[in-house]
Image: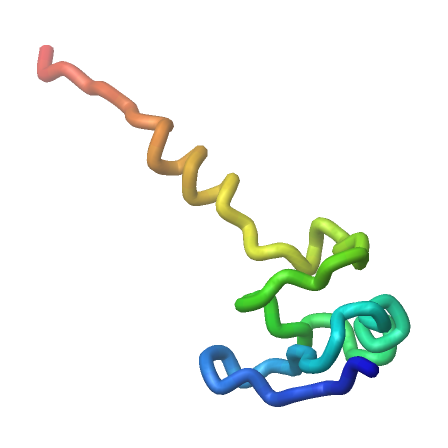
Length: 69
């Protein structure tokens, strides 16, 4: 059986146990309070809950070149 745990890294709510009962556990946790340090196997995580790496990658890839004229 799966159960809630407090993540020591991020302080949010993660899980312990077998990993077979994560869907109801995930839905019972308030939005934004899910620990994402460990995967949630079998759970479809909404994109708003996932850490956004695309913004960082886009900002790093975008450069503006100016020339003194």
